[in-house]
Image 1 (cartoon, rainbow, N blue to C red):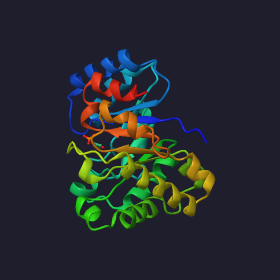
Image 2: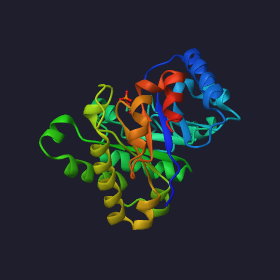
Image 3: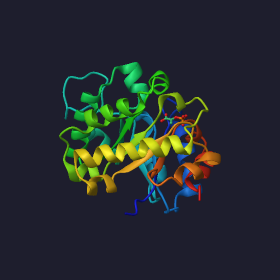
Amino acid sequence: MARKPIIAGNWKMYKTQSEAADLANGLASAVGTYDKVDVVVCPTYTSLEVVAQAIKGTNIKLGAQNCHFEAEGAFTGEISLAMLKEIGVEFVIVGHSERRQYFGETDAAINKKAAAIYKAGLTPIICVGERLEEREGGKTSDVVTQQVKGCLADLPADKVAASVIAYEPVWAIGTGKTASKEQAQEVHALIRKVVAEMFSQQVADAVRIQYGGSVKAENARELMAQSDVDGALVGGAALKADSFAGIIKYE
Ligand code: PEP
């Protein structure tokens, strides 16, 4: 089954509103009409509105970096899905390793967030990936399998099929160390197998699995050439229009 590649930029806690508008305008000029891959940009909450304006009428889609799973309520400092949706957000990253590490986000919380994202009519980008000591201890398969099972437990199959999973080995994020194409393919195939076991082969064939971890224009092509790699989640190299455009036009 042909899966359309999806390349997303996670801007993390970088870019003020004016800087974000500049970057979004640069991307709109560079890749706004490019349609060989789905392109998503995920600025901070405070820049969502200006970025939404900058990418209006282009093929670039808007994503957020987090959300709360409750519809509304007394949750100081949190943002609801209705708030994101009103601005034009279509994708929400959940379970990024930085949120797991610094904010205690668990598979159970990610699972609740994914369910809420579906309910709001948006698409989650669900991140999984092993830490360095887990890879070195030969635990990659166990860790990633457990994360996928925990994050996707009891979710509706048709929604999972339309979702995005990002495999991001923690040791490769922001380190300049990229997983080899063989390492990436091996874990992507494992994730697809776990999805098939949990749901069906049809769901597994449809779900898009991004690789994330020091992706740059120079390595995007060989990673994307792997049969189970359907895109990239990009941090550092997404912060400049020319380097992100180079990844998007990897072919
Ligand atoms: C990320 O934050 O999801 C990421 C992959 O970062 P980087 O591309 O900088 O490694």
